Image (cartoon, rainbow, N blue to C red; front, side, top):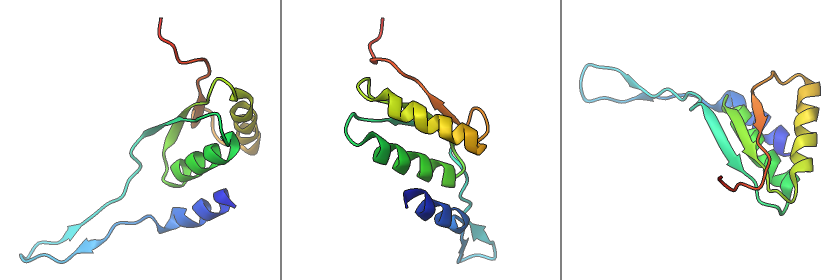
Length: 102
């Protein structure tokens, strides 16, 4: 349901022509912002992953996902399903671990 909603929104992301006081034409352009970083908490890992991934992919962005150290398997399995479904390599990336530095 989440992916269906954002898939329907993907073709509705568009710019607008702006009314100007001068003889110029103004317009907005909505473009992907680049790489989206998503840090997932331990509760509801599948739902939170779906909300973040679906929105980023609909906007044309790539992702780096850091799941909670208690629930990394959910994210890894969903990303494996994305890979099998044909999502190109490097579009969705996962970094696991406890997050400590050093």
